Amino acid sequence: MNKIIYKEFEIEHICNLRLKNSYISIKKDFKIVMKTPKVSDSFITKLLKEKEDWIRKQLLKFELNRPKKINLKDEVLLFGEIISIDREEASLLRDNLNSLKKTQEINILNSYNDFYKHMANEYLPNRVESFAKIMQLKFRELKFKNLKSRWGSCSSQREITLNIQLIKVKKQLIDYVIVHELAHLVHMNHSKEFHSLVNRYLPNSKTLREQLKKIQLDF
Image 1: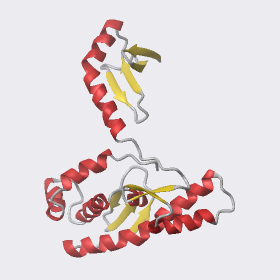
Image 2: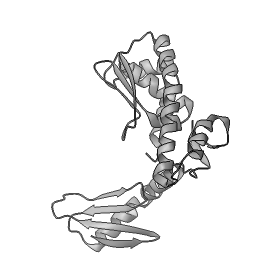
Image 3: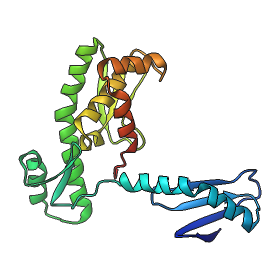
Image 4: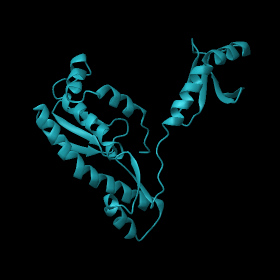
């Protein structure tokens, strides 16, 4: 692996003799990686020139959708908004932080996680029940977990699992995830009929889905 400088970009070049084609990817930390078989310098320059506009667009997209950062012990991310822990909505978190005997970062993070779990259990069940009633659907069980790669899931046993981290996004996006998972009680796929069902209850579902895809959270 070596580094290539192209204009203002620093690119990691990985030469893999087993590759048949060349690829450029951009990581969430803004690192640009190029993978190629053994090629000439002129080929690399030509490829970067062809992909320059795409690289710039991807970097801009990542910049606009950076994960929201909060100042621990001062702020909390709740329903898509960074608020002061002095606000009433964050009273439980504030009390937990004030009662900490050890103020290492791990203890502070645990207080935040406990707060998000509490808020998930307070807010999400009512929304799920409300939409289930509107959609005339029944589920067997509702669970909350810290999921790594998805906002929610619905099993063939009619169990719905929602990511606790949903409490960090806007309420309309939470509603989208809830309707999405409830719709899987009818269609265990992402077929045209599935999306039509979601859109019946959330006419702007496509827009909400695209917004949700762009959100990066620190899990």
